[in-house]
Structure formats: C-alpha cells, structure tokens
Amino acid sequence: METIAKESLVNKKLLKIADAFILIISIGLALFHMYSASIGVMPAYEQSAIHWGLIGTYIIITRPLKFKGGIIIDIVLAATNIFLSYYQILIQERFISTAGMYSDFEKILSIVAIVVALEIARRSIGKVLPIISVLFIVYALYGHNLTGIFKTVKFSIARIAPYLYTSSDGLYGQTLYVSAQFIFLFVLFGAILDMTGAGAFFVNIAFALTGRVCGGPAQAAIFSSMLMGTINGSGAANVVTTGTFTIPLMKKVGFKPAFAGAVEAVASNGGQIMPPVMGAVAFLMAEMTGIEYGKIVIAAFPAAILYYVTLSMSVYVEANKKQIPVICESEILKPGKVMKDGWIYLIPLIILMGMLIYGYSAQKAGFFGIIVSILVGFIKNHENMNLKRFIKALKDAASGIAPIAAACLLAGIVMGTLNMTGLGLKISSIIVDLSNGHLIIALILAMLTSLLLGMGLPTSAAYMVLAILVAPAIVQMGVTQMGAHLFILYFGALSTITPPVALSTFAASGIAGSGMWETGFEAMKLAIAGFIIPFIFAYSPELLLVGSIGEIILVLITALIGCLILAIGLGGWFKVKLSVISRFLLTAGAILLIMPRPVIANVIGAVITVAVLFIEIKIVKR
Image 1 (tube, rainbow, N blue to C red):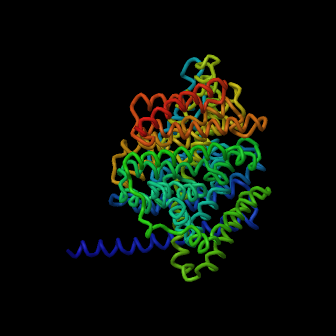
Image 2: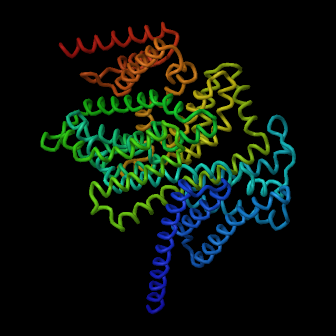
Image 3: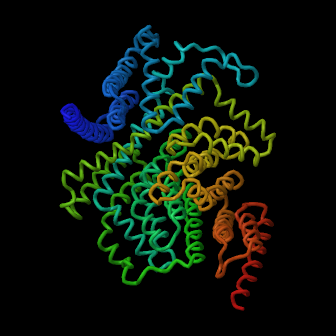
C-alpha cells in the first residue's frame, strides 16, 4: 500500500510539472508568433525550427508513452527534438561558409531527425502519414532496383537524410514554414475569438435566422459551423468545437444520430473551402501557384456557396420527410436582438477580410485580427477576459496546431523524396497516360488519388501533397491552374469525411453516438455537391467567374437549380415522399443541369425536372 501511495504521489507531481510545461509552451507559442508576425523578421528556416521545437515538445508532453520507464524516453526525445531544431538553425548559417558539405556527425543527426519526426508525428496524427512517409523513403533508397517508369538513380541514406533534414523541401522546409508563418496565427485567432463569446454569437444568430424553418437546429448547425470552420483550419477540430452543442440538439428534435453527426461533419469540413480564409489553405494556394490571394478567394466563392446550399436543401428535405417539428415560438431567438447584442463580434472578421483584400500579408492580417478580437472581448464583456480563459484559449491554440504542424513536417519528407526521385512528375505522367487523352478519365483518377492520399491528413497538408503529385497532371490535360488546384483542394478536404479514414466523421460519430460507417455514408450523400462541383472547374471556368458575364450567369443559375434538385432527388421528398423512379429521374435531371455544357444538356435536364415535379404536384393535389 505504501508503494502504491508513493507512486500516486509521484504521478501527481509529474502531472503538475507537465501542466506547467504545457502552459509555458502555449504562452511561448503565442508570444513567438505574435512577435514574428509584427516586428520579429527572421529567416524561414529559423521560424520553422523554433515553431517545431515548441510544438514537438508539446506533443511529447501531452501524449506521453504509457509503459514503465516511458518518461525517460520522452525526456530524451524532447531534448533531442529541441537540439535538432536548434542545430537546424546553426547548420543553415554554416552552409554559407561550407557550401553545403556535411560532416559524419551531421549525417547521423539527420537520420535521428527523421526517426524523431516520425515518432512525434505518430503520436499526434496516427500511423497513416508516418507509414506513407516511410514508404517514400524506402522508395528513394531502393527505387534503383525497379524497372520502367518508377526506376530511380541510386540514393544512399547518407544522401537522403541530410537532404530531408536541411533542404527547403524537407522536414523544416516550406510546408512547415506555412504552418509557422500563417496557420498558427489563424488557429490562435479562432481560439481568441471563441473566448470572447463570438462562437456563441455565431451559433445564436444561426438559430435565430433558421428557427422557423423545418429542421432549424440542423440549419443552424450548418451555418454556425461554416462561420467557425473557415477560420479554424481543421474540419475535425471544428466538429469537436461546435458539434458538442449542435449534434445533441439535432438529435433532440428528431434527427437520427448518424444524420446529425453527418450534418456537422459536412458543415464543419466545408469551412476549408469557404472564403475568405478557407482554413488557411487560401494562403497555401497563393504560395504554391503564385496566384494572388484575392483572386483565389473570389474564384472559390460561388462553388462554396453551392456546396452549402445543397447541404441546406438536403437537411430541409430530410426534416420534412421525417416530419421534424418546427421549434416552439417561445424558444426561437429574435435575429434583431441577437444581432444588436453581438454585432461587435463581426468587427474582427471584417478587419481581417479587409486587410487581406487590400493586400496586407496574412501574418499582418492575423496579428491585427487577434489584437482586435481581444479589444472586442474587453469591450463586450471584460469579466470573461480573465487570466483563466486566456490560458484556456492559448492551450486550445497549441492543441489545434499540433496535428497540423506534425502533418506539415512529414509532408516535407514526402515533398523532399518526390523532388529527389522525380516521382511527382512520374505520377502526373501515369495519370495522363492512363487517361489516354480523355479529360474525364484523368479527373476521375485524380479524384481517387486525392481521396486516397488525403486520408488521415489535415486539409492543408493534404493540399500540399496533392499540389505536387496530382495538380500538374490536370493542368497538363488543359485545365486552368486555378481549376486544377481547387479540384484537388475539394477532394483533399472531402477525404476527411470519406471512409475508411475520415477524421471529421470519426469526431462527429463519437459525439452523436452513431456508427462511423453509417455516419460516413450519410456524410458522403450530404456532401454530394462537393463531389460534382470540382468537375465543373475543369470543364467550365465560368464557375470560377472566368468568361463573359452572360456565360457566368447562365452557369451559376443552372448549377444552383441543379444542386437544389439534386438534394431533392437524393433525399426523396417534394411535398410528398418520392417514388424510386422520380428520384432517379430528378437526380439525372439535376446532373444535366449542373453540367456546364453543352447547353442542350441543361435544356434536357430542365425538361425532365419540370415534368417530374409537375406530376408530383398533381399527385399531391389529388
């Protein structure tokens, strides 16, 4: 008994020490990134190294090894990670005088850096991306033994490891730099904004606007999750943030658990494609393509609206089919009152959007967005802006960035080996060759590749991998650069709701108490527009607001009507429960309406739709 008591006392002391380190790192992360976003100009490699030194240590502390003696390994691992990050800065500065020559010690250190990165990332994001990273390293080592298109020149580990440790395409390279430069600031912005009470305001205004609609709680979940999702940077994190409130409420009014979880997963995930922030992917895309941020946001907006309109219509159809009752009048919030009480929470978003549109850097916009959010919090309710809530917000930000940074770190392994071996160009060539010149086949292959490679990854990391592997093939087939990159972004984002590895679906099904597969299939059905719209990018740049005014308007109108009809056809309700034949015909008509060309397809789709709906209305009247 005495031994057990001593062990319990030791464990309590260790927990207190761990909590102290978590607090120090959370505060350090916030201060460092606020400093680097304002007055602390530093080289990319230095910012990335400090960024990961802090986050890697945070991951080790918050996800320790459970077996006896594991604490010793964790301490050694944390110390090694800090030293590796520190030495990364030294070695980059030394390259100026040594012309990139490595000592034997640095070669060994590079191998250690890869092993440490894989282990820390495994603790944060699971096994999928670490396994993929190892497979890419194995390919670089043994690809010279292959034949045909996949054959590479011979690389030794003494060449591969230092390249991955030190190059701008490696562990501490451009993928991690994006996390260090942009993404953490917007994760922190979201945490601070939520701390001020803005999150509750977004939910309340959504409920106030949709309360009188059948299935109002689900509609509110859609739009509140959209508002939070666009600045969150992670669909799964947004599910946990807003879903804990919206999913139980949807279940309470009569929606099935799987459907409620699917609505939240699809709505939260859609924030990654919704301007202006797009979960920070807009900044990544601008960096990868050279296209101005403002142009990306404007081009992405119509498709994002179609995504949410389809989801909203699908929920409306399901609510009527299941005869979900409208919320009692006494429980409905007044939009005017909610807006009057909370309009001030919109100021940080307006300032953020304004600065981005007027050409300020994402760092500057994020910095001032955070400052304004804090000021708004003190103006609105200074009692809530206490030290305890600040600490929670900083810890939430550290927790939110950890899996994203880990994924960005390992994305550096993928990018580095792709550049060394030339595999990125080979995969693009394979897609082009297999399609045999047919764009639709190339797009389907690109879709499947994007869904596969995006499994288990945050959207930002998935996009970076796909931008190298898949986008060049689509561009080579004649698709615009904007269309190609938005295509892979959509399917990279949709991979988080598509089984078997679906992070957003996992989170939603856990809260809803439903099966993962059942929730996943419901989510795929609700997100059907997201699976169709990217194909329009390829065939019709008008959806990206490129072309004549008349053509753009025509495409937008037919696509909007088509998405609404698609929701009706798949949902199976229009004033009355639809027959299987009517559902099939409406779904076919909707797809023809969504197709940008030929125009005759739109006409046929419109005729089919009008005929079926006319017949169904006649049946209702009888």
